[in-house]
Length: 565
Image (tube, rainbow, N blue to C red):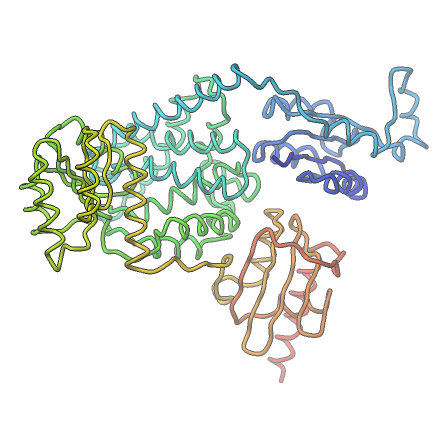
C-alpha cells in the first residue's frame, strides 16, 4: 500500500525539495505551508509520516508535532532544520553535540523504512474483532430500521456505498473503517427528533429544520464517551458540511472537511434522494446521480462524486425503474423470512412474504416480483409444479426463481437446474452468501434487460451552470490533481492541475499562460473534469490564483471593449 507523507514548510522551495525525493520513491505526498493547514490535512487524511521544517510562521514545530500525534498517534513525525535557515543566524548557537544535520538523501530512507509489524495471531484477532464490531452494529441498526417505511435498510445501503467509494478513492484500511462506522451511526441522533417531522407531508418549518440539523451533534454526544479504535466522530459531526463552506455545524470547506465526511455527505444525499419521503417521491438512481453531479464543487467534493459515479456504474444502479426491485420470499419459517427480509431490505430491495408455493403463485400472478425465493423442503412437488407453471407462462417465463433447501439430495438439485431454476441454495449457508448470490442473479437480469452499463468519464457539465473561474477555484481549494477539458462551438482546450496548482494549459496552437487565459474566459460550452490525470509537461509556473485573477481582468477588458463597440 502506498505510504502517505505530509511535508510542512513555510519555504516553497524546501517543500518541493523534500517532496520530490519522496515521490520518486513512490510515496504519496501532501504539502502544507503552515501549522494550521497541516493540522487540517492530518484530520482529513490518514498519514504515515510527517516532516516539519522547524521554522513555521504560525506555531512552533514542537506544538504542531503534538497536535498531529493526537490526531494520528501511529504516525511518524520528524522535525528538521534546513542548514539554509541557520547558516547565517544566531539560532545555530543552540545546536549541541547531540544535534545532527542530515541531507535529504539520508533523511528520506529513514522515514520511508518499513514500519514494524506484529503480524500473526494478535493482528488477526484484532482485525476479526473490528470486523465483528462493525457487523454487529450493522445488524442492530438494520433491526431498528426494518419496519420503518422511509428509512428501512438505508443505513446498510449507505454503508455499502460509502465503503465502495472510499475504496475507489484508494483510502487506507483505517479510513475505510472510519467511514463504515460513521455511516452506520450518523443518524442515531434522530431519536431525539419528533416523529411528526418525518411523517408530516409538506416542507419543514424553520423550527423543524433546526431540529433536523441538531441531530448531528446529538449523534456525536451519544458516542463521545466511547473509545472507538477509529476517528469516526469527526466524520459523523461534519457529514453535513458543504464543500463551499455553507454547510453545518461548523461551516468547514474543501479539505478542512475530513475525507470520510466528504464521502458520507455524497452517499447520504444519494440514499435520501432515491428513497421515498412524505413530501416527495424517490428519484431513480440516474436522477439522484445527476443531482450529485450538478452540485459537485458546491455541496460535494467533485473527486468524491466522480468516484461515486464509478461505483454506481459498476453496480448497474443507474437503470431507470419506477420503484425498488422486489423480492418475494416463500418460506413457512417466520424467523428465517424476517432475517432474510432484513438483509434484502438493507440491499435496497422491497420484500414481500408468503408461507408456501400456492401463496407465491398468487402473488406472482397479481403483481410479479423481480426475483422469487422459494423453500422446497415442505413439498418439493409443489416447488417443481410452480417452476413448470412459471416457465410455461409468457409473462412470467423470465422471472428469476431460486430454490432454498436444507436437503443434500443431488438428484433433486440436478433436476431443478435442468428444468430452469436460476439457482439452488442451501438454506443453512451464511445469510451473506445467500444475499450475494441473489444479487448476482438480479445483476445478470439487469444486464440482460437493459444492456451493460455505459462507462462514464469524470464530472461533466455546462459552463453556464459552473463557470471556469469556479472550476479553477474548486480544484485549487481542494488541492486536486485533475484534467479539465472544455469544448465550445469554436474551440477545444485543456488545463491540467496538480495538488491544486495549474501546471499545463493547451488550446489549439497555444500553450501555457496564453492558453490558460483564453480558456478561463470562455462562458459557453461543456466541461469535463477527470481527477487523477496528470500532465505530461509543465507550461505554467505562476501562482494559480494570480493567473485566474489576470484571466478575469482580461475578461473584463474584453467585455468593456465589446460594450463600447
